[in-house]
Length: 129
Length: 231
Figure 1 (cartoon, chains in turn red, orange):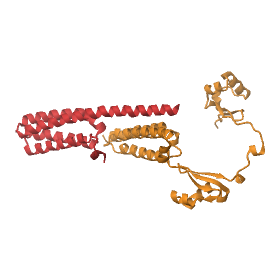
Figure 2: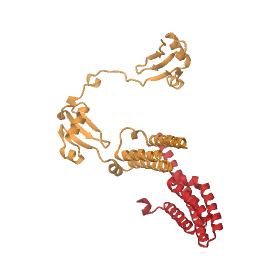
Figure 3: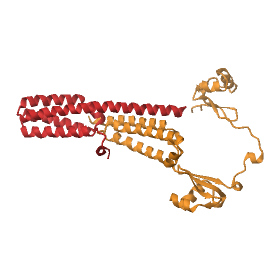
Figure 4: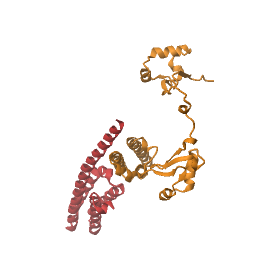
């Protein structure tokens, strides 16, 4: 009887965990893609030298990221999430000080980290091995 | 800030500790005692996985919990499949090997197992036998333990051999433990509190609070130990 109970408990836990992971990973993936598109917009604004717009968008990006960072911290390595947070913060200042090259370098770095985070969520040979 | 950080480590340790205990309990009692190879692998992995997020706060605690649940599930499923599929049992656990038969060491089997003679002799001595020719059969079990069966001429004499009849011993039942009456056990004996109080009064004990342990022993007698007086 105990044997059956334990089997049921572990199966319930495992399948609940699978459902949780599936839903959570999808939400995180959507969020990261959303952030990535915002970074694209900032890049365009910096390219066009619209610094005011770029500053506002980078601030918006920082606020969105800060708000949802707690969820990212639940499944991603904190060194990645903190690194991204710091880089977005730098980006806001580069946009404010109208620093083209630093701003573009920073936005590229943000996009690269985001791409890395998004790619980590795919079940691929690269990620498994 | 620094203090908070250390508290996080403590909380993570507690959470993971209870999760590992829970996983081990779910996996069953065998996990604690004898390990089959696949159980040993899973237990080693669980202990290793749990320590990583425990000490490194950059790793999310879920990175510890998810593999532990997965390994628990895997172990449970493998145990069930082993019961149903004999072939899988042999693949995962291997087969027991007879290393001594009729007092003769099976040298080929020892070589296959990479089990040296000194280890074998040590195990045999630990089982209480000095000579190999006293042993009828010795089996190296899949859990790594050696089962030794001596020749019938070397076994100790049993009551059955001597034709002595003796009543089977019963499981002792606790009636009072540290001042508290175990009502469930009283019910098992079809007795009530009044009966217990009467027995206590017969020994000049006025209340169960004076009793450290009261137990019906394996011979069916009531054994009572009262608290020792201080000073």
